[in-house]
Image (cartoon, rainbow, N blue to C red; front, side, top):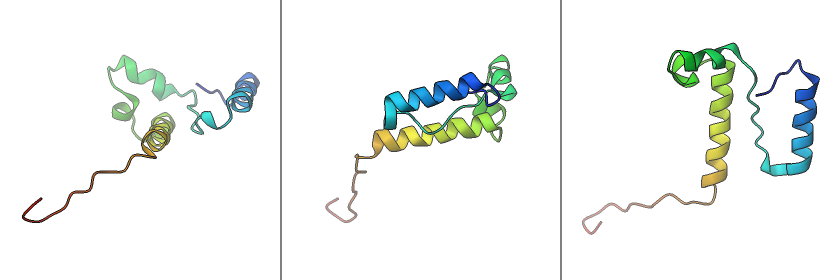
Length: 84
């Protein structure tokens, strides 16, 4: 979790990006009150506060992960017709 006001957070992100390069996701999850509240309500951040910064950043991360994992996988082709 990234705290924008914390210099150490910026330093850690920079060092991680330098060391791991393109293996690091671009989405950075910020510290956020809503993210802290969601578990105490027994919900994910997407269910609890879907338009919060934290929820949007987790969706951004999920999209990045999806693109990396499934980038080389071609969806099945379904043909239509009597012999399909």
